Image 1: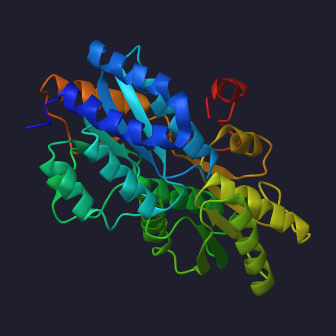
Image 2: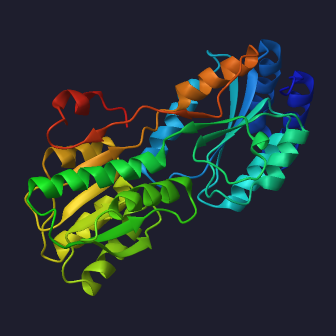
Length: 341
């Protein structure tokens, strides 16, 4: 069912690319050619990984997790590509992997749509495709083998349920509550899922007013810019829902510069997503009220999936990583010390 490796074809394809690069970049490529010869001798599995970018602490940790999994010691040769947040770069990378006849393709799609053609090309080349962190919207789900990542809709629901409980604790569950949302990259799985999940809970509360939702691109700089706009536009903001920690950092800067306060004892409650170490430190000190974890350590899951495919085992269509919800009550020194991202 899956692509049968032919190391001669794989190496020949990669060597052809390296030779073309040699014309431009010179003798430093000798070491790459030697390594590819060694890959063939070692009978290593060649995996092409297209990462969507390096826009956040989560993404950096996600990349490190993959690079630590697909090592020579584990029997793999990793070809890594950073798409820098551009779908056209990812499409080029995937087609490059196909032309090199890699054994597996793993990628984290920038957005959900626009992948049908290239995934069909991979299927015709009999190269299994595994989705990482985010999903794709295709009519034919046989174009990819499985997806390893987070349940983004559930993450959004967790945020909504936390706000329900918090408002009840503060005896504000009947009061009008004004909410603004810093959304991630439009059309991405995380943006779609977190929005749908939170909106499902918010829709049950007539007193929750979502004043506006605006894309802040998952970056601190854009998060600060969008939050400044919200603060100028709306006098009374009770809650900020920020769909990742980097946007949260920017938003907090903007709020403080406006003279308002945040967090447990502040004017504005902060709901964030990802739970990177620096954000959890802010949770522990009460600056961020709650952080919904999005676990970037997906390399070991991906490694297990490919090991299963190599032995002919049946894999599920979706694997979710384990995740938690963090507040002041459960962020301990031990958790902070053990945090790898």
